[in-house]
Image 1: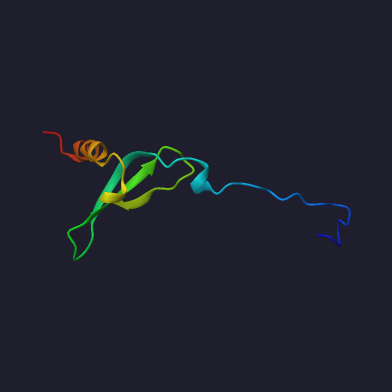
Image 2 (image 1 turned 120 degrees about the vertical axis):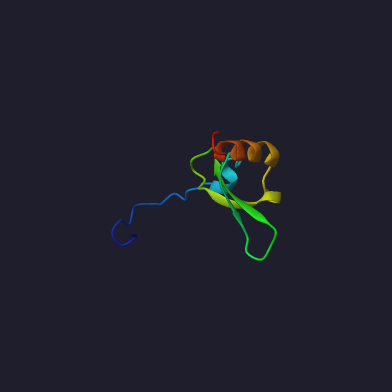
Length: 80
C-alpha cells in the first residue's frame, strides 16, 4: 500500500480481544452430553453477549451451575 499511497500513514488499531472485552455470562444451558468412557457430562451453554458463540463446558467450569441446570432440566422434562 505504501507504493500506491505514499502519503498515507496507517494508524494502528488498538482493539482488545473479544475474550477480554466483556465478561462471559451464561444465559442458559442448551444441551447436555456424556463423555464416552467417563462419568462426566458437558453442557452446551449460550452466553448473554451475542458476540460469544455457544460453547461446550464441563460441569465444573460453569458458574451458577445448580441454578442453570435446574432450569435446563425443568425445560426438557416432558409435560404430564
